[in-house]
Image 1 (tube, helix red, strand yellow):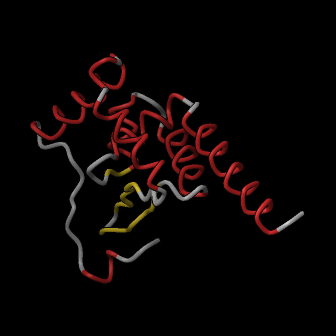
Image 2: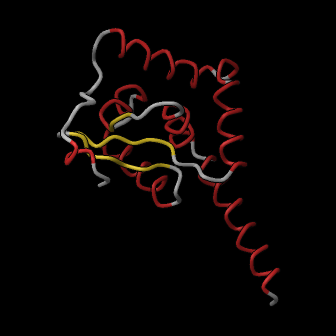
Image 3: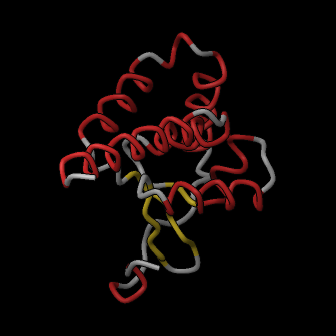
Length: 134
């Protein structure tokens, strides 16, 4: 196999893997919530109404494929988007921009906003040492 074909095969495998990740409802909901902000597992679990261990498993899969990163701040671990490929960024942005067409995604966004208004967000402060990558 030539170098070109090998690179083309890897690129195709990455694209298929990205769409496989998006094909799970919980992971898709997590990614849309993380667009534009970092959230901790407990925030995601409450908004999604999904058990925390299930959210953690999905975040692990998203981290393994490079779509999210995790950072420790104080006693919390926060997750944020790290989609590096322009196509991945564009697809996620389009989904977020169109979320009003998808009642579940819209309800998640409203749940996040309600949590913010009620002051139920985890602390985003911590010392510089605590803000390192986990």
